[in-house]
Length: 413
Image (cartoon, rainbow, N blue to C red):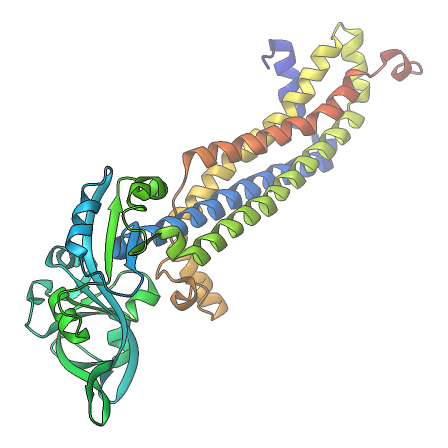
């Protein structure tokens, strides 16, 4: 909506109320503040939700790939042939054999449940970015060495060089019953994935050592698959379904972690809806401030009409006034939102100190740090929502002002 110099001059005058119009200025200022805070909150919450989902997906994918091919009986006997077929599937980036089994670990009288993973040497090397202590190159087959999660090391009180014992309840059968298999391993590396539940149960060893520990021979239980597009993994792996019929099933990252990601999506939609109502409240504040401005400027509007101003001129003046208030609040809200996101960790630390509570408990939140990822499309959508509602809020008072009859207003002047 383009304004001529006359309309723009009046608009600037109305955006800066005079000395006797302090209450109108206060209401307009509150409108700007509410728009700013609502936009900032929307940006912060949506960015944190996106970051939470993205970080979880990245960490799950780093550990389990985009999908897992799992046998029905727990053992893939012809896994080499299946592995070659998976690798030959279009858009499959990588596929690796994997052994994963829940077992028990003991050290200095402490017993913990762990998830023992047998990885290939290539997959073990990829864990280098998660290494916080030790040396992954020492994880060689038949060397009796393992890497464990950082939180598991804390829970056990174990350090690099300590010798811990892994217990396999399904040991060898004897005349006196099944004897659990106990094997001691040297801890040579500590790994921190950033996901608390993984870090407190994570045990990694070469795949040959895992086969020896579990007495499975040359078989494996899983094949982890990474594709070119995590969101399209179902379509990519669809051609494998007939070949695996009756042998194994394919579980992608959505089904493996369905409860977590479904809960995140529902919470994300609910938070967006709830915070959008704050933008609506800000729009009503703009409406109320414009209504009061129109009532205060009724005489001025009548004089402008007698001087030749058309109803269209008056309409444009008040629509521009309200929309500018909304746009200014939106811009400052975007700036405030990015400032909060940039300093989110210090702000979280201050809140922890001020409240005496661990607001971001990794045991509950899964991640050790508060993540954030901004989506430019969402930012634009939030800005359009705020400015759009501000524009709609101006229509009623602007049309009311445009219908002002100068004869009725100035009759007794």
